[in-house]
Image (cartoon, rainbow, N blue to C red):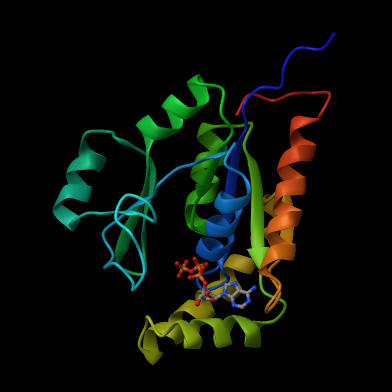
Length: 198
Ligand SMILES: Nc1ncnc2c1ncn2[C@@H]1O[C@H](COP(=O)(O)OP(=O)(O)OP(=O)(O)O)[C@@H](O)[C@H]1O
């Protein structure tokens, strides 16, 4: 009686250290029906990360050649390192009818909204700035001066919340609750009467 829902593109964004990678990893375990695009980055691998699963880790030169040949849907220089979305992965997943989840830093979300007007965008926040700082400190992947920059940038990025469709709080020790809300958003979007092409 009703046509099947169109595949959707879901953008997950938020300040550095808020837990985007942790949220995506957990959502991936819970929702094998979703296609998670593997972001390419020029940053160094962090302990426990797996090439091709968490990210494609490439040199700056390779990344720049991908930019030049148009292989990236969106890319940004984030804290001195490139991050970008390989276009081919998104096109292939959508053409198979899969819903696609993208991890995009706040500055790139505008670009993707412009390129793909039907995207669903979600901004992840911590319950407080102190909590965001605590997470960055406990991750131990940046020196102190770089952490300070990230916290300042997080303040600026939070000014852009209104451009996002949803905001979800990732509370300390309650990752699963955040992930459940994210899954509920995706499911509700699939039930809309007015379907938008991702
Ligand atoms: N709900 C939570 N409770 C406690 N710790 C958390 C929670 N969510 C994430 N973390 C931890 O906080 C740290 C930062 O998370 P993560 O690396 O996923 O952030 P990110 O947003 O992907 O950061 P970046 O943009 O810098 O890559 C990690 O050590 C992660 O394990």
